[in-house]
Length: 377
Ligand SMILES: [Mn+2]
Image (tube, rainbow, N blue to C red; front, side, top):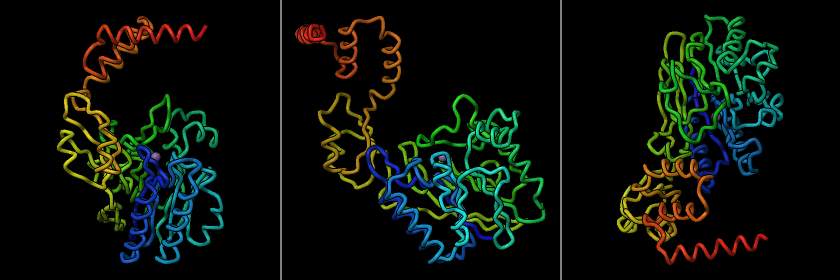
């Protein structure tokens, strides 16, 4: 069984005001071109097809194009589940009809977890749902968090599973080996639950020959070679600048697994670039760039100027301010109700300019504040 495992497409995502649609289209169309040559038996998309519950129309058009090409042109069945960014019900639109064309989309969770058998291998499709929804669906009050919910779901799969066959689970979640630090997360993943732990222990999945996971945007295995995140095909946050984005090509038998990686190679990389403003202005790039300026003082209109050389510049911060800012923000918050407006403005000014307000400026601010108060009467 040869599987192409991918996930977290987040089609239509906007990163720092830039639409990723063009990059996604390029990478996904190339994926179709590549799988055509690889003799792939099935393609798995392990959740977060879209970035939002109601995706922009361009995103829906692209998803349709890619699925249609995979099935009609490449002749490869597609298995897809909803992630936490997708709307479960909307993703499932027409799913029953589409399955007759070998596009198997599982949007909403069912009591009986869906099994699709292709070329003798069983695929179990576990779309994302929070533990409250799972508790309600199963009428099981013992489910207190995602760990409990997943355990109950896996038990119900195992009851009917033939361990001599090839059994593959497709799921979307935060799977760890012991603790959170056993895997690497990114800033573009939205928490799966508020108030309870969002983690699920990898040992729950021991019965499967392969677990195709979605959610974490970095490609990684969890404990075993047989439990893997493919990661997202495109970088979606500054924290992902160092990732090597890839699809996984998994060859699987009962007693053998071989995993190859296919780099996604987006045309535009997302990078962090460090340096002094004047140096950076000597260079240019069409990549998505987060700048870390080494200059001590603020450069007037720095981002605007940099965008002339780096049209896809995404962000800018000053290294000299980086470590200090969070502390000062906390302190400002703590003191905010104890200070008057002029003191607060002085703090803000000092934080921004690295020098306190002089007397002349204080008078100007005083005057403005008095006018504002008068205006309110
Ligand atoms: Mn997700």
